[in-house]
Length: 367
Ligand code: FES
Ligand SMILES: [Fe+2]
Image 1 (tube, protein in one colour):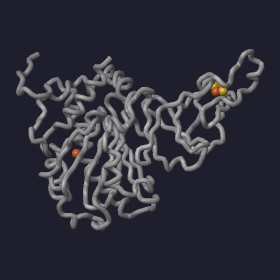
Image 2 (tube, helix red, strand yellow; image 1 turned 30 degrees about the horizontal axis):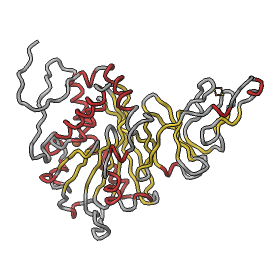
Image 3 (spheres, helix red, strand yellow; image 1 turned 30 degrees about the vertical axis):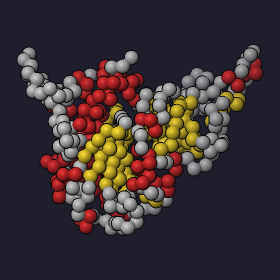
Image 4 (tube, protein in one colour; image 1 turned 180 degrees about the vertical axis):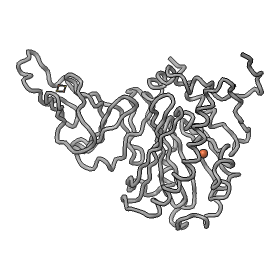
């Protein structure tokens, strides 16, 4: 095997095995996904005490529930008797009854009743509790972290919450109105890297160069474990929907906050919030969720059109890119190339990919 001499003193793309090797994915499962803040759902899905929904972080089934004190709590979805799953889907419960032998838990996770347990000498119901998971609400979005010692989101993503609130002044009144899932036949990192750099945009997104953003002002910078996309906008008159530019300070702005490892909040002019959630399926497949939100959840033709346009253009264009990269990573003819790190940053720099690679390696090569 010949190997190419180094073409620069900077950093290179990651070796293919990081995108192909199930052993790397297994390490990421424990050291990345089980130790970082993962999106669970939206607080509006839990309006009343007892409302719950189930979800998963890779193979770990969990549920969020609003307890009697109106706090949102998250538990592993498993009974502490003989491991039956407690809940399915979403709904409302006054208490959590296991379908297997009817052990019954309160909304705070404490065991309240277990049939015939008084026949067991020393049975201590007070000592039995569902396993709780760290939970935070970030601008109405519920995040969980399976690592009990994880730093709070504020430390991972400094300023992100305040900035997002400034860009979306009504964020606490937003409700989800649309959710699309796009299956991509690629490793989750291929998709996240593609989202995080705009070096490919001019060539691959026709609307980018001629649309709303001013490409020469586009930039992506790391801010803690957040990748912050900023740009100036041009041609707001080309927007396909009306915008009241006097409504607030950021009414005419575009920005996005990617929260490592797999969520992005994106704001379009008009304070239109939409989200990306990357959910890895296995080492070669990822499911990308696209969410759209409106104030009070009001149905909006504008949002419906925008969401469809986005699927048909940017998303479809990116799917072709990432799936081609995944195939290329399996080629025996590929040697990882140098990242294009422009000292002045900007739209054609891959600093963001370097940040992603650094965060990944710090996570999986620690311990
Ligand atoms: S496994 Fe839940 S009650 Fe037995
Ligand atoms: Fe793209």
